[in-house]
Image 1 (cartoon, helix red, strand yellow):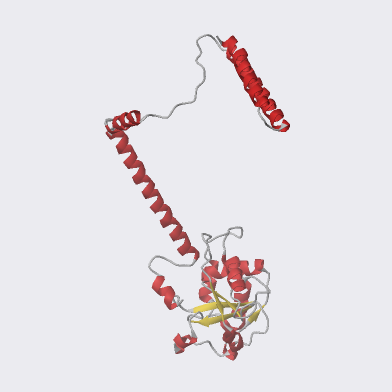
Image 2 (image 1 turned 45 degrees about the vertical axis):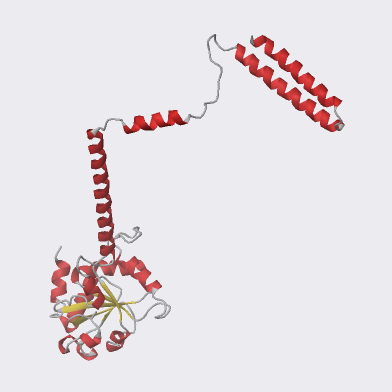
Length: 288
C-alpha cells in the first residue's frame, strides 16, 4: 500500500546512511550525504501525499517509453498503406499554383514600379543606354535654376514646366562633378509628385533636368530664376544637335528674370518680342 512506502524507504535510506557513516569518510562528506538524503526523503513524502489525493483508479504518471523497432515498422507500414485523397491533393496543387502566380505578379509589379521611378517604359532600355530623350517640337521653355533656390519654388516650377514640356537647367553640380549624389537627391525631391513619398515606387514629374554651364554662358545668365525659349531639344548633347537646334544668339533672344509664376515669365517674354516663341507654351499652360 502507498502508506507503507515512506517507512520502508526511510528505513532503507537510514541503513545506507549508517553504512556510509561506518566507512572511513570525511566528516563533511557524511554530513553532505545525510543532508541530500533527508531532502530526497522530503520530496518522496510530498509526492506520496499528492498521490493520496488522486481519485481512485487514476494511473500513476509515467514517462513515455521509446517505441520498439517492430512498433516503428508497423507505424511506417501504416503510413505507406494509407489511402490517397485526390481532392486534398488537387487543393494542394491549386494552392501551390496560386502562390507561384501571386509571386510572379508581385515581381512584375515591383519591376514596373522601378521602371516608372527611373523614367523608363517597357522596351526603352536601349534608348536609356544611348541617353537620347525624344526631341520636343518647336520652342522649349528652359528655366535656369540653382540648388540654392527653395525646394518649394523649384517644385512649383516643375509642376508648371511639366504642362509645357519645359526643362530645368542647373549651372553645375552642388559640391562639384565628383559629387553627383546631392544633385540626384535634389532632383528626386523636386520631381516627386507626392513630397511625402519615399522609395523607388514614387511617381515623378515628366520634366528634364540638365546641367549645362555652356547654356548659362550662351545667354549670359547672371541670376536665377530666368527663362529663355530654346528651339529643338536643349537636353541633347551639343555634338548631336543640328544647325536648326543650336541655341540662338544671346542678342536675338529675350531673357526674362524674376521669381514669379511661369505664366508671368511667358507673358514678359512675349512683351519683349518673343510672342511667337511662347505661343505653344501659352496654349499648353492655359489648357486645363
